[in-house]
Length: 290
Image (cartoon, one colour):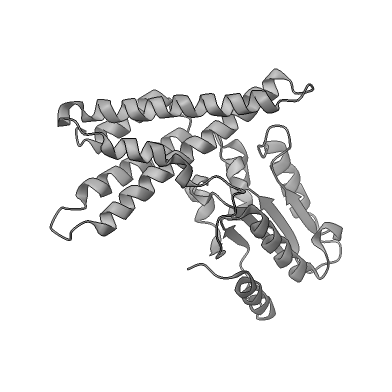
């Protein structure tokens, strides 16, 4: 259940006063600006002053070049958290956009799991994400999730941007033997166009000092996030159809099968499985061939 900004702040204050704060919270919301403000407000209430001015506040976020959170950033944060606090009773770590730890092989996210599993004493970890569906399940399971009530501000892409894919996907109808091929073709063509669009935008905005490796890393990171958003858009539509479908026996079975297959696709791509192979396997499952 989502809560308002003020409700979340009040609940955290009450938990702090009662000595019942958890060690790690996943804060989610649609507006990056509101979510960052909420995170820093909670940190300020814990530390007693502006977090950016406090030695016991530790922040990591995607770097300006690669837009990823690196293993080095995670290791540096971990070293800081295991040191004794300077002046506060509780050290506060804030990770903005932790989904950026989960790209590719997700080495930064896996490196951070140990800290989430066995956090240092007197430490509060806040993760603020507008795309929690892209986080590793092992990260989500180790945090208390708090959803911020709000509306999309346009700062962050939403699944609505992938409506053309959704429309074409659900309009695709073929015989069972070729349905998997037809769906795979739709998804493959959409992802090719998605990559080209992102690449064009990066080339248009590239600076003179951006080297080729940086541009490639940036393109791949943004494509992976957009690709996962497109999967989330399909899952969301299947869920909507399952809810609104007639309650006759077996009516929602195809939607459930598709949701599970697409969730598996999400995980397979996070584990760096070959895209074509993962896509083919998923479409075979959705067509109920395997």
